[in-house]
Image 1 (tube, helix red, strand yellow):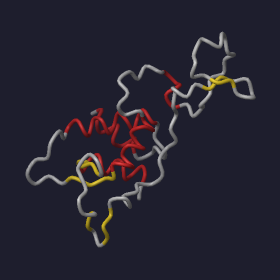
Image 2 (cartoon, one colour):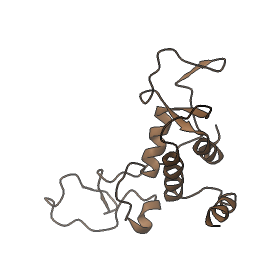
Image 3 (cartoon, helix red, strand yellow):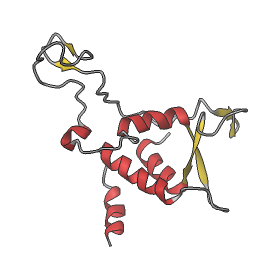
Length: 150
């Protein structure tokens, strides 16, 4: 069974690719559109969740970027053409063109809920769902926690 093989192989990935993380969490989140009585959901800082989403390009519709998806290079190795080609590009000292509209985000550090932690296992008062925190279903939380700890 394909699902069993994937689950087995997951154990051997020390740091999974951005694409793998994104696809895995999207799949798990898709299985749990809304809470069902008796289900357990985990609280995660919206700030950390957004860092992770930017890192994996979670909300990006088109993933047809090939191998560049996992590239950590922020510059493109091409010579500038006409300066009017793209007003946002800048030529760096090394001759590479940097386009700030193409963002590459670093992998976030461990899960950090300190901005919503009210101490003694409680949340800070007056927090708002999807502004300050998100709810993550158990399967997705377990996967994220296995990758990031915290």
